Each structure stands twice: as C-alpha cells, then as structure tokens.
Picture (tube, chains in turn blue, purple):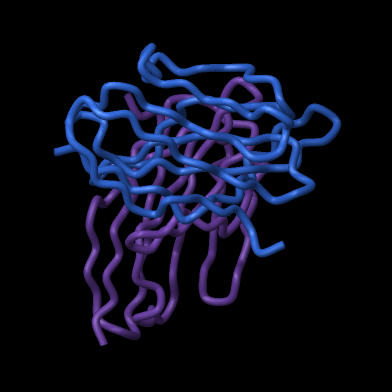
Length: 117
Length: 110
C-alpha cells in the first residue's frame, strides 16, 4: 500500500456545477477524515468516519456538502451547486485508532485542488 | 478560529543558519503534532509530543512540548534547502479532531 490516494488531483468547474472527490485510505486504517485548506491557512476539519459511520460534521460543512464511506473503505466528498468560496484544497487523511485513544497521527493524501470559476 | 497560533508566519534564512518556530495556545492538549507540507502536497507527520516538558530530536530537528502542554517549539539546526516547507502544529480536540495552526512558511536559501 502506497498511502492515502485522492483523485482527481485538480478540478476546475463553473459555479453551480456539482463535483465529487474520492479518497482511498490506507487499507487497515479505521478512521477517515476530510479537511479543507485555503491559501495561508492550516487545514480545517470537515468530517470524519469511524469505519462506515460518519460521526461528526463541522459547521463548515453546509447542506451542499455530503460525504460517504459506504463500505468502510474508500470515501467520497460531493459538493453540490459549487460556489467560488468552495475553491480550496480538499485533503483526506486516515488513521488507525485503537483502544479509543486519539493519537492525532494522521496520514494525509496529496489533496484535491478545487477551483470554482 | 484557530486554537493554535504559530509564529512567525514567514521565515527566510540562509543555508546553514538555525531557526525556531513557535506554536502557542490557551488550551491544554493531551498531545501535539508537527507536520510539514510542501506546495501542492498533503501534510506529512514529523513528530508527536505527549508529555509536558518533553523534548524529541529528529536528526537536525528538535521539538519541545511546554511544561503546561499549551505550547511547543520546533528548532532546526544548520538548515538546508530541503527543509523548505510549511510547518504546521496541530493539537487533538474532542478525541477525534485535529486542530491546526495556520503554519509557518520556511524558506531556506542555498
């Protein structure tokens, strides 16, 4: 396994269109996270999954955003009716959390850069 | 709102010089991570510090966790151009969420 894989790496779309990003985590990792990063800022938490269950969503995740992890493996992040403010790098990360203790040690993918015109 | 404040925001130094980057918070963290991110890539974990006062060394990088577990520093000795990147500190919150600082952009000139 070569790590967390994200695609597409770059997406340019027109305002109002829908986009979907895919993340393939490290295979044995049970947690999967989505973060968003804009220029000059650190990554901001969007949502996370424990296996297939989506356990938390940030206020940043408006109702135009939806994330799934149907079989507890890969995940998709869909943005409907994109707005220019959605332009950002969307980062996926995975981790192996055991015994309920959060280690904070995330393995990030290379990100999917979204540009909304 | 960032829980973690990093300083300086930008740092440009000559190869061979030393540098220190700071990460401060009003919150106590059970652990704190340092990540490095290169342009167009995702962050890569460098180290985790857990115990107050802990010092960890990774080759020319020295990481320190404050006694009160609210702050941390990263010191690089004899910086090289390969050290160029965005250095991010992050702290765990709510047992699942990692909160990041805005980062320090380090440029090491050859």
